[in-house]
Amino acid sequence: MSNPTAAILIIGNEILSGRTQDVNVQFIAKGVAELGIRLEEVRVVPDIPARIIGAVNELRAAYTMLFTTGGIGPTHDDITSECVAAAFGVPLLLHEPTAAVMRERWGERVNDARLRMAMMPEGAEPIKNEASIAPGFTIGNVHVMAGVPRIMQSMFQALAPSLPRGQRIEMRAVHGIGVLEGSIAARLEQIQARFPQLDLGSYPFKRDERWGVTLVAKGTDIPALDAALAETTALIAAEGVAPMPGEPD
Image (cartoon, rainbow, N blue to C red; front, side, top):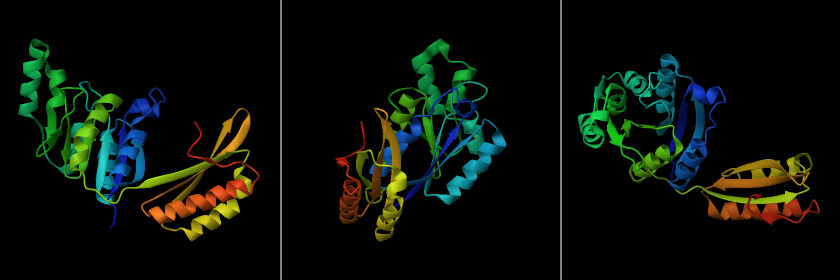
């Protein structure tokens, strides 16, 4: 079975400036892996309409689905919704059911700025969430979500049941303190060659002033994952180091 593919488009000057640290990618990556969706690209673009529109069109054409985060709030620099509408060539309209909920909940506090969060491309379907009244939305294979992590997570959880699924992508990991990447690189490449259906990665870390390495295998072939884990465990042991399952705490 061929697994669906996905990309993430992070929108916002605050990410590029370093002011805000993105934590959404990790959450989405883990979530889609559990659904058997292969995350194949992550891109960050500034709050520039042409850049957003171009990225949306390129990524939605290249992958089964595209997730965007950021830029759907009430301020002048929240331009994701209008850019996605432009990418699809449809008008940006007030989603009346969402506006009605806002007016009911917020009463006199509803203003033009807050109603910006009820604007969606024509034909879009809202993505509800338990953390905020204002929804994200789906149009075609593009899922537009908030940048605030707790709101984005709520939106993703609401969206997940409707996403296409593939075979669950699983991971096996082993690590060893005192192992250096350079000493195992050639043998690790040989293991990867024996398991082309898996993604085999090496990730160095430092603990108590000592370097170590974590070897991670990812894929859908469970017997191959278990066999690769056995070989990477033996690889660490061959360095005279006690292999430890999983990733370092």
